Length: 96
Image (cartoon, rainbow, N blue to C red):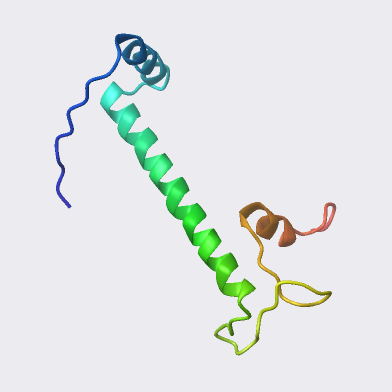
């Protein structure tokens, strides 16, 4: 994958803030800005994937095991978003 040059015109005050933030992290302004854009892009792609998964399970689609997922009801499969899914799979506190 190659790289491309992107030229920006930004406000002097914003550039000063970016310089300070980058310096605190020991980075160049360019690396700081690129890292910020990569994080933002990842967040958007992750949320799109979560939404697609929730739509998939909300439609009553059949998963690879042949189980039909339903979005409501006790004991039935339901979509879980990022944090809820992690919390659901944590062992109880105090267990080994």
